[in-house]
Structure formats: structure tokens, C-alpha cells
Image 1 (spheres, rainbow, N blue to C red):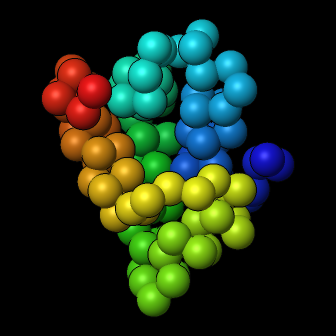
Image 2: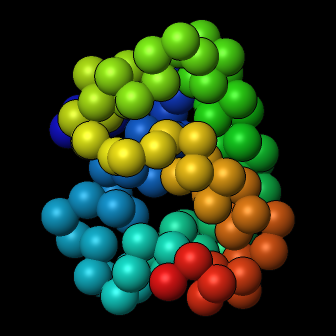
Image 3: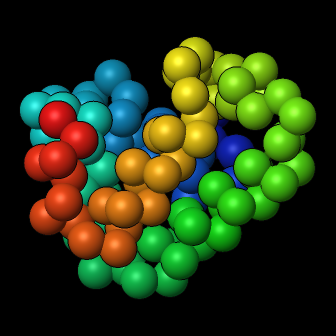
Amino acid sequence: MPLREEFAALSSLLTFELGEDMDEFGESVPEAIAAFVQTPDPERNAQLLRDMDAFSSRFQDCLEEAFLRWFGRDVPSVKKLFDMIRAIVNDPDCYKQFE
């Protein structure tokens, strides 16, 4: 999946942390997300939150289809994924509750 400039922080998370090499960052998706947001780049984390808000707003009527088209990933609920990411951004240690 190519890195996209629009929604760049979200694309980076999905491409690098949750991509083929995810096991380098964690044993589970929530743990890999926690590793991503714990790196010392608060602006990237803020951008990640903005990306999810913008993506959700832009594609509110077709969220899952747009997510698959943009990021090449089929997820049962983009809203639940984004809610989990938001929670982990705000408290990286809470990733355990999502495992």
C-alpha cells in the first residue's frame, strides 16, 4: 500500500506499524498502535487524530468502502478502529483493553 500524502499520519500508521512488519512493533494491532503513538512526535499524533476526523467526515456515508479503497484494508468497523486509535493516542497504556 503506497503512502498517501492526504491523511499522511493515518497512512503511515497503516503502512508501517500495521503492515507486513507489524510484529516488529507489537504482538497485536493495539500494541503496535501504542508503539506508534509513543514515539516522541506529538504533532504526528495530533495529525493522526485530524486525519481520522477528516476521513470520517469526508466519507461518512461510505466509511468502510472508502477505507478499503484508500488503504487497501477491509475492516468490519472503521468507526471502532478509529475509536480504538483515539483511545490509545490519549492513553497508550490502555491498548491492553483492546486485545
